Image (cartoon, rainbow, N blue to C red; front, side, top):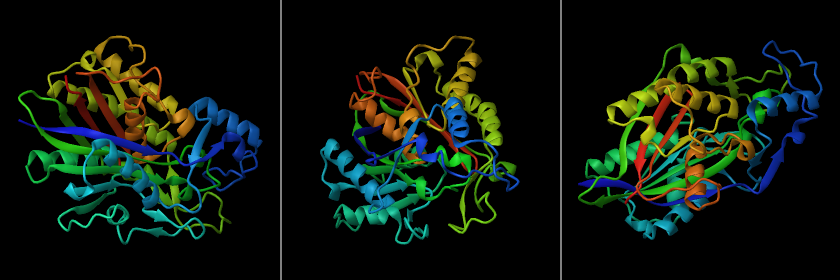
Length: 357
């Protein structure tokens, strides 16, 4: 049988560390366009209490999204031990392309994946660059697409990247700006012939495109006098929170049921790192569906020190654990892990992955 197997992974974290103290002098506005009459210290303290985010990484001004995507890709390719010319596809998940650090203009032509292919020096004309814009679940959806290409026998080696520079897409007058951050991560997914099944075992995607479309959009600043970028990330936090708790645990259980697995068969759950409160609540509701308690160290987290890097959260966490850089978490032979995400549009997806024996 043909298995879809991750043979190399890598990530890039910007050098610029931004703590919550950075936002103390910001002027935040409410949804009515009024200045929030609270001190910066009070706002940032409450923010950290809820999200647990204490710091995040912002990309340097001389780097673009395609640059950090390339950095992560090079590491993944090196670890996989392959020649980049052997790649059949370069798939890059992102939400805003390259964003000019001054003008905040979004640039998606050429595509990010094409820029990465160029940066890697790939001359193979049959290596196709694809971009995936699917909200925060974009990297997992790219992994699913790569898996489908491999299972259809139209590809053998695929580079799958998740990269975003959200610090350049936020409204500086919206408190949710403190959630978002920058980062990139990548994996090489390869076709491996074997008599036993491992790698990607199953996957699922659900897309809610009704009123949910308005929960996370590009909108104008909460500050009516803001003269910066015309469009910024605009999130209805309460709506997103309620949607996630109602739908994500149930979607994960449905996937496990279809795979003839229980939550007790899963060794690690790598959730999209949106904010700690929401992720904790998702895990609690998921295990509640099975009527059992939450095992220790089943759900690693990085949001506290990396923030929400959108498409990069799950593959970054995967690589950190693979490299034993997120203690006490480790992957072991034959482990089954579940990777799941939720985000704009609203999309939910998940992949069950098993390491080789």
